Image 1 (cartoon, rainbow, N blue to C red):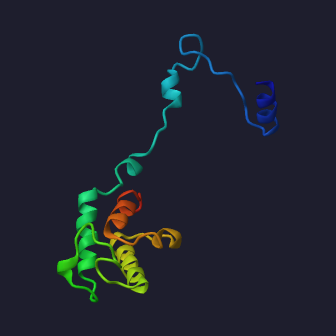
Image 2: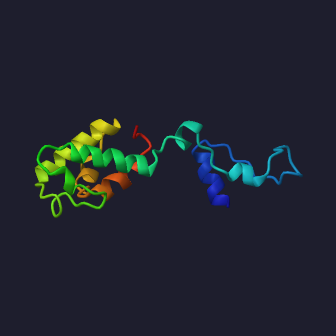
Amino acid sequence: MAARNALLKYMRVNVRPLQSPGAGSLGVSLSQLIRRHFSEEVKGSFLDKFEVTDRVTNVVKNFQKLDPSKVTPDAHFQNDLGLESLDTLEIVMALEEEFGFEIPDNEAEKINCINLAVKFIASHPQAK
């Protein structure tokens, strides 16, 4: 504890011992201090997975190089739809445009089926 306090003091961070709610001037419970607070904007910004599935499926169906009747939520871009890696990249770019955010290259390389695209987009807070 002494080493921690010395390190924090060296870093110019004020260190005060945590007091229990009844005994000190804090007036808040320990659980309130520990609880993480997120803004309402971040809490409610994730898209519904069913909506994302519909939108991703529609983007893929509108791709010119494949038969729309083969597109299902479980379809693999190369195995089921017969797309090449460049075609997959074009679909990822179309998804970026549809959902209004950029998918990092390292994540875009992993997206090889509709399910993975849905999972990534539904868990991304910037997706619109």
